[in-house]
Each structure stands twice: as C-alpha cells, then as structure tokens.
Length: 296
Image 1: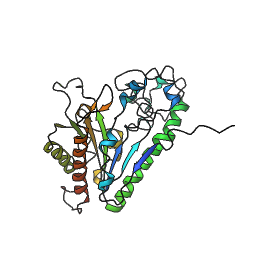
Image 2: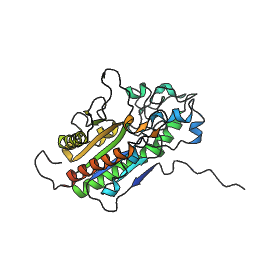
Image 3: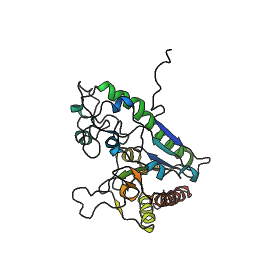
Image 4: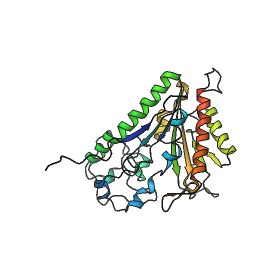
C-alpha cells in the first residue's frame, strides 16, 4: 500500500519554548544546537555521525532552557549547523562547492564561505570536508528557503512583538566554542566570550552587567575577542532603536566531553548559573525605561 512521501524530519525547522507570561522583552536563541540530521544528507557526506556533530553547539539549548520559566521565550533551530548555518547571511556560499553557476544575488565574496563556513558549510569546525561530491545550487536554495528563512522570520517576529510591547528588546544569541586556544591566544580560551560587535549591537550597560555577573560567579570573561558577534548579532542589534543583541560563547570544556559530546558533571552547576544570568538580564530589561544612557 502506498503511504505517500516520508515525513520531513525537519518539519518544523525550529521550536519555540514560550513563557506562560512574558516578564521582560528578552529573547534567547540557540541557532547551532540542532541535532536532526536528514538521512539524505548523512548519505552524501564523507564523515561519520560523531564527526558531523563537531560543529554543533551541543546542549546549549539545555543550558538556557530556564528562560521560559523566567518569562522569556527560547527559540532553537532543529536543523544542524553542518546542514544550514543560521548565523550567516542568507546567501553566503562558496562557489567551489557547487556543480552549477550561482545566481548573482549570492554573496560569493564572503570570507566565511571562502573558509568553508558559509550558510551551507563545506567543512565541520575541525576542518574536515563534509561532502563527497559537489552540490547543486537548487539544494542549497531549498535548505535556505525551508529552514533558514522560517527560523529568522520567527526570530524577527519574537523580537518585534517584544519591542512593540516594551519599546525595547534584547536578543541573547547563545553559542559554544571549542576549549582549545585559537592561534595568537597564549593562555587558552576564557570561559565566556561576550560579543556586542565592539559596542555597536548592544548598549554597554547590558554587556557590562552580563560580564559582571559572570565574573561574580567565578568565570573568566572576554569581550569581542575572538568572537565579536555573527550575522544574527549584527542584523538585529540596533541600540539607537532600542533593539539590543548580545552574543554569548561558552567554553565547551566547562560542561562537556568534547570528544564524545557528553555532558560533564559540572553541567548542572553551569545551567544554574545561566539561570542566574538570565534572571539578571530580565530584571535589567524589565526595569522602567529612563532617558539616561545607563538604562536600555
């Protein structure tokens, strides 16, 4: 008996955990914790399942899952970063990945795409090549239009709704980073990196408070180095309009075994600390707006 086409494993492409009652104009987002890998994608890769997952911000959505209970929504992509990267511009593509010519609206000069980390990635985060063969542009277009664009449309709606009710809003874009030190950093990565695009995406009072809270909890914190903020932070952060965006990167070595992608015992403590940070940001953004520069 013909049962029709198989259901799309990425329908819906994202999940929103909504609060029962909104307490502050803050939206939390986890664009890179998606772990649903379509079978047709896996069949075309060079990599085993664990290697494919190296690009995931594994468990980041769980670390921030207290946000809805504290009165703020959490949106998380279900599609994996190796399949579509929601923290890139919509058409940052490497022409060398494709068997056919790309249309003129594609950003073929993107340095991120040239490095293999465009909207459709060529490599996973450790540099391993993903695909056996070149892709067709139609496949990239399908992924972007059915996954990336709905995710960003819903994120924009959440922020617009919050801004309309409160005349201000804050996006907290949640990420993780490998524990190994990148070139040029002698002492290794800090525990957290806060990215506000060097002050252009978020009022300093917000970033200052996040840094102060994390330092009080005992963490080493850096700002904008080596991560100043990606597409999402730059796109949504317009402080002059009361729209703030802050990127948070958490050192994976704090909370998980990076080789096996398994949580460490410290995970529960870190999740409790993130709940504290969430509450602090909520209280700041829920405070009555004032005309001085110290309040969002």
